[in-house]
Image (cartoon, rainbow, N blue to C red; front, side, top):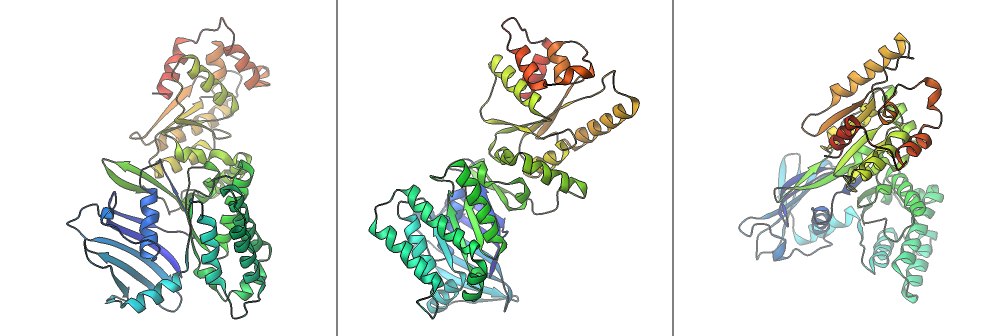
Length: 435
């Protein structure tokens, strides 16, 4: 069973929204903007959360939560929860155009097939999750390797007062063991991995950067072997640009919750190869999904110089992220993603029309410049073009090709001199970037 869509009406601070599901769904956004409300709605329809009167956004309207899912034997179905204030929840199933209200025993049987597990950020979150996993994974042979390992870890948590950090390590080791011995688990779980639905609150809690990266990689692999995962995170370590279809950006606009997703194809042909290579060079670019504004630059020199000069002018903003794209050729791919998710941005690039360049090089540069300008969404984006690059603007002189060795070091050395004054033209561009 695989959930394909979640629909929510009149729930907490949500009037109405739809979320398209992937095998891995990553909920991101600022605090108190609706991520927890979405997870609670999932918990409610999975029978893990009892709806309160305070969950009604409008007490005169019904709460309605629906999940559309695919089941091998039935095809596409919709499971719906409907609740009026002061009344019990009612459940319905929609299949092949026919809607049927379910009895309580039918509801319980349906919830058992979903196998939802919630890993909360509470002190007993990991213990509760492992108990839920044990109840799902118990086989006819209670002496199986899987059950023994689960029982051992649950007993260990029960007998020892562990910090959340150590509890997460216990969970991490169990999930890792599944992947290390995946063939055994596949053969002995009778398809239960495919019906496993994991809700993970803040997986980054108490993990080092290194462990966070490994945990994210582990969750991706689990989703690839059939486990459906929804996680809510504030960490860029759990947001990979290669998995952009999994990203669900939550924003609060005019006192209502809006969702931004893109499940279509953003990149084509060589763009995909170049983008994936670029990702491995610098995997931390996922932080752009958490930024108030993204500043796209070509390389290190631009990133270092812009940050330093903005601080010198007193306009540096920690809510803005400078993303080093690696080259001008890659900037359009980042623009496409930012356009899709409606994230404000400015693309900063070198015109590259130096006198020492030949005609072919200048023509190639102008084609790249034109492509960047053509992709800008004027409602959320802008571009700044350096003439011919930031070094010439910093030094206020034309530079020879031989002067471009160790660019970041010499540029920073120049702008950090006590007597250095930022040229007016460059100052205006930096203010436009940080406006």
